[in-house]
Image (cartoon, one colour):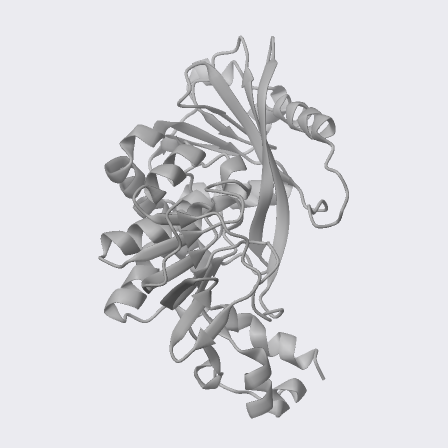
Length: 380
């Protein structure tokens, strides 16, 4: 940990998950002086527990599909060229887990430009009857990243502070976080309690649990079905994981039942293929954040009180263009990536860098302000 500095940074990033680490790396590469803060350490939460798959999102046509397609291509290039020691490339078999998912898989299979082929016989023989009979798509190229390894590699050389941030202060164009100061503030804190009064931002927490196991089975590809089953960079170790518990929150005061979580993961994994001689090595758990409309979040944050004071009739449905909202100065949020954090992080970090360094406009469809007007109407 470096000594606290009063000399200003260009950017302070709060949250050292994949979005925070990737943003810190990208902004530092662009020449900015960056401080990275996290109360629990690098990749200590949902990012460290993630399966960290670089997989396409199976979705129908629309803005989300376009963004995810571009993000997937950029992520493959980013990790293989910048951090090749932390990425494992394997074929990927995505199997529908419901009739609704089958419709998406069939539509995606028809429309995608990504190379896919017939499931090899050697893999078919591993699958359960349910998995064999479900709609599926077999990609020639898939990948999985060492989540904690790559986050730590991205943060190497960045000033990191293991601090619990309790309040933020802004004065004369400078943000103060304890003794640290910077012109720009970037919040990448996922579903953790917000540091500004931004209740309008549509975020849902999703508890993730991953286990590393040893098994006598050979796992030749990455499987996405009811859960994800994947080989890893650690020879002979297989990872099984899911964002499978949407009801548990670490802030509820209740204790998460690890044994029960393990049982659920293994039960779901066996719906795909039969795993033999299992030895559980490690558990990784953490809270991930998804947006309420499934699009990722990247943009400036509305000052709700100031905006409602300026435009009180928003509460009654008056239309105000988001460009007229009052925003916190020089604050940007990245959030809401759900189970695709490692796919979206390079995409979002690059656009954050273009915005802060080159002044390029951000995509308004990703702005957290998209949630504001509906929230404001509920305040009347």
